[in-house]
Length: 415
Image (tube, rainbow, N blue to C red; front, side, top):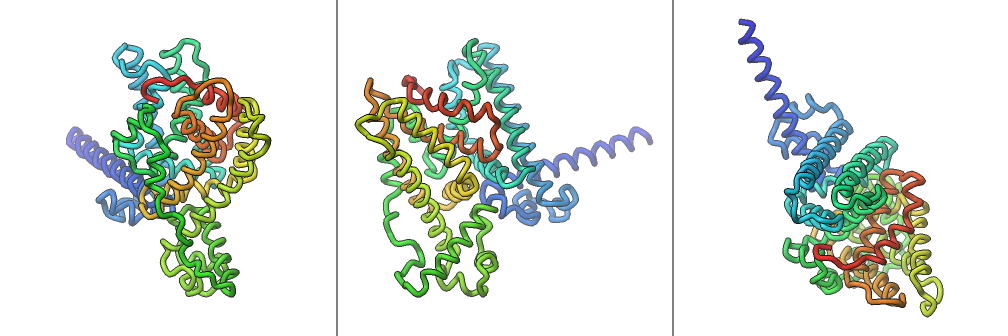
């Protein structure tokens, strides 16, 4: 009797663990498709193929689901990197000889086979910057990843520093944020990262048609003030919650308008999302343009460009950190919503051309075509770390040096 009871108890425990795992997989799927605002017990139950009662039994609150999904993703990533570390140590990972090789492998995986988990991670890391608890979780993420990447880096180069490993992580994050919204096929992504394909033509094709007027902007002067009020309310929601949190009702409440007010200016939510996206991108474009145009182009050298880049970075992180959470939240929404993709591609193209021009002005050698993309990616990756995890003084002190390493990058196969 005792043995039979224990067998039944183990069976119940096993079923509980299986159900819990299915719920967390469902939560990760929802996060990838609809973001944190779209994550509800009902949506998770539907994605997991379990009852609503099962999700509420295992996770009483939405916050509990988010916390456990974050831990599940972190554990999975760390386990995968530990396995890679073991293979490298045993000589069984012949395709990874440098940190660059590792960066290329992880970025391609993020864009391909691990796309759902990658998108969920991007959503969670941005969400982390919106609260103290979220920033603590993001700090745990980065601390854990920095440690294991440093161990891997030491296997590839005994002289590798922890700061080099951390910079490689920032490059992966930045590349992921740059390229996920473009929905590149595996061959194109691989050719791009290998330096055999230029980014600019891809962005030109993806960004075609973005010069049209913003939705709802019909030139009505009398309604322009109210329209801007609606738009600013939508942007505020995006910054605080993400693009998936925008609805006519939420906008009306935030703007102090009647429920029907926002729909007069933006009949569909898609319209207001596109308009908010364009407004955020215009703001950022103007800030970057002002920063990169500072100084005399004829006097541009590596030191001057690094000074400008570092100054722009600190302004974006410290003065516009909250807005950048909203900016990149809409940016990543384009990974699921093709209608938002052209504006993202156009914004990325503007930045890419600006970096390319400034880098080309530096005397003293021809830099590879991949350097502007790497500079963009490093900038974005370090910015995400700082606004999501409230980086420490050591993170801030490395910024200029990490940008310098990108400018001095030597072309290698893979990235």
